[in-house]
Image (cartoon, rainbow, N blue to C red):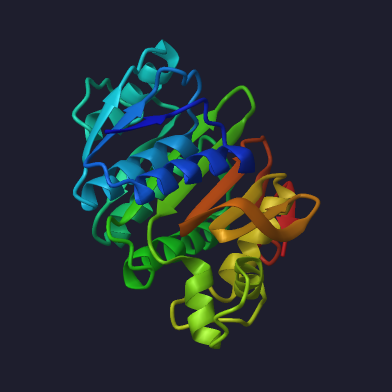
Length: 292
């Protein structure tokens, strides 16, 4: 039996290193039973929910039996009961919390359903004030990453998403995880550069005009608008794939090597829920925040 200790999980690069290490343990183990032990977990962000949910299904796809034990912390247990995770794994559940962007499993592509999910649960009009054109541009970029999971990433278990609205910090989080071949492998194949680093591969994807047949992220203005909006909104966009990591925020856009490698891809977006109304610069209506 492989027993995995699931500790406190936030959403920093160090927390993702912990999550990726758990994946590596499952990948390396010959055991047929995997136990996810929450005995020491006293905080569990949406990043952990999406990743652990996906990892449990990935372990099952490797013909392993999966169980959860010692879900003792009431705050963590309540959160999992109210964000859809518990119900997905046949644990006692409660009605969804109004602050949850519910845990979602997509084994097959359901683009229209996913768009409704993002519109109603993530970019809800009561949480962030966006013009329709701007909202559509942001959604199309996330949808592009979602479509890639099924069309090109070859994830054996699909896509896993979870988010959360944090009223105290006024932050809206969204995490999308897949267990496919990752961005670096696709770019290396496309460029015929097998030695290209993961950091350089992700940097290549984010350069305007670059594209692969895999369409790893939204091409054209979609990604450019999201990056501009993240900066203006004081949010952040983060990508983990292979051992590559990129972060775009108000002050910087940088690419580096992450401490722990994960073959798949994680897309994480944090937005501020403030009182401003945001729209594209070429729209007619008055707005407090104009850009692009």
